[in-house]
Image 1 (cartoon, rainbow, N blue to C red):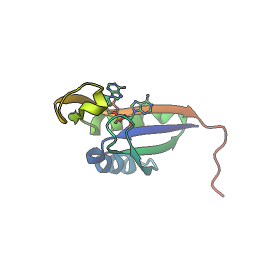
Image 2: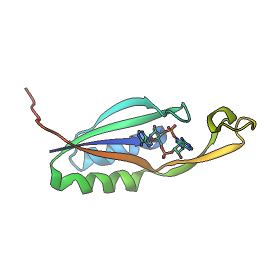
Image 3: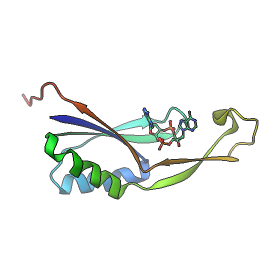
Image 4: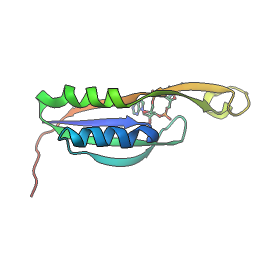
Length: 105
Ligand code: 2BA
């Protein structure tokens, strides 16, 4: 079994979660904050058998957009006004890890 961590934009999290649920995947949503922009994002946890990992990633990819988001001068380490620097955020950042044991008790 694998555990997928997917960090998605808050505005995409509903679409991603709904599509995963409609395809039979269980999802846990966590509120998270990006360390760079210091703005809210959503971390999804999905536990799946190894042969379904690619299906989950395809759904996440299909439902996540990439966006330009303003970073302040403080974040970028340059002396520029807030909002003058943009970074590209997403679609989604995905980690796939091994699960040693999975129980529902
Ligand atoms: P943030 O850390 O707020 O980063 C937002 C976006 O800012 C990133 O988009 C990237 O384009 C840019 N960025 C991040 N760190 C940077 C840096 N040191 N210098 C210049 N630009 C930087 P994404 O790469 O799409 O990441 C979106 C969110 O996914 C991140 O939000 C973070 O919450 C998470 N994330 C991305 N890579 C990660 C990693 N290797 N480990 C843990 N979380 C990660």
